[in-house]
Image (cartoon, rainbow, N blue to C red; front, top):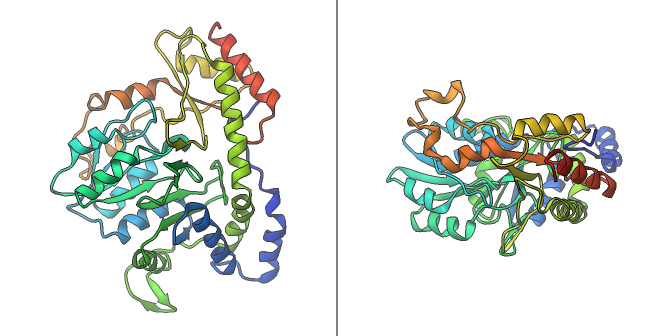
Amino acid sequence: MIPITAVDVRDAESLVVEVLRSGTLAQGPMVARFEDAFARAAGTAHAVAVNSGSAALTAALRALGLGPGDEVITSPFTAVATLNAILETGATVRFADITREDFAVDPDAVAAEITPDTRAIVPVHLYGQIADLGKLAPLAEEHGLHLVEDAAQAVGATFAGRPAGSFGVGCFSLSANKNVTTGEGGVITTDDDGLADRLRVLRNQGMRTRYAYEVPGHNYRMSELHAAVGIPQLAKLDELIAARRRNARQLSVGLAGTPGLALPAELPGREHVWHQYSVLIGPHAMLARDELVAELAERGVGTGVYYPKLVFDHDCFREHPQIPAVSRQDFPVALKVTEEVLSLPVHPALSEADVDTTVREVREALGA
C-alpha cells in the first residue's frame, strides 16, 4: 500500500538522546531553540511553542481577549479544531463559504458576514496553500478585526513572498501527519511583543515566575522531547517542501485530462507546500468519490477525505448556543467540496515510481 502519509524523524535521534541525558524533560532550552528556528522560518519576531495546534488556536484567541458576545468568522470546511478553539473562548461562530480554487474562505463571503460584534477573522490555509490574504488582511484592517491565521497545514507556504503566520497571528499544528511534526505540538507566531508575553504566561498556568499567577491559564507547554523531534525538520524544511512540490508536479502532469477529475492549482503569488494533494471527483467521473476510495484501496493506493462533512454538521454542534442556526445549503461551494474532495499521496517519502503508480491506478480506475 502506498500510504497517504509517512513519518520519518530519524534525524532527531541525537537530540532526543541529548534531552534524555540532560534530565530536563519539561519546557526548557530545547523548546527555546525550536522556537528560535520556527520564528526564523515564519519571518516573525516571536514563535511560542505549545503542546498542540488546538492549543495554539485557543491560546491565541484567548490572548487577544476574545470572549462571550464577540463574533469570529471562519470556514465551514476545516478540521474541528478550528471550531472548538473559538467555542472554547465563549465567542460566537459565523461561517463564510469557500472557493473551489483554494478551498479557503471567500473574502466576499467573509465581508458579507461582518457585523458590529465581529472581532476576528480566522482563515484556514487548507492543504498547504495560504488563503487570499491579499483581500482578507486589508478587510480585517479596514474593520479593526484581529486576523488569526489557521496555518496548521501551511508551514513554509508563502503569499506574495511573505510566509504563513506573518500576516496576523499564526497558529500551526505539529501533529504526526504535518509537514513538520513533533508528534504532538503547535506554535503561535506574532510580531507583537505584548501578545507573545501574554501567550507565554497563559501557556504556563498563568505564571510568569513560579507560583506567581497573573491570569487564569492552562498547561499548554511543549516538552523538550517534542522540540527535539522538530528541530531537524525545520533545518531541512526547504528540502521537504521541494520534495512535496516535485511530487505534486508529477501528479499534475500525469493526471491531466483524466475524465471527471479536477486537479488542485498553485494560485498566482502563492507558494503551495502541498500538505495534501487534493483533487475533486466531479459528477461526470466514472466513479463517485467514495467508490474511487474503495477502488484505489484495492489497487494499493492510500487516500484521505479531508473533510467529509462541514465542520458544524455533527449532532454535538447542531444546537450549540454559540453557533447561530445555519443550514448546509447556506454554503453551497463548501458542501459540494465535501462530496467530491479526495487527497492522494504527495509526501516526501514517495519514490518517483510510487507517484507513477498512483497516477496509473487513478487513471485506470476512472477509465482514462
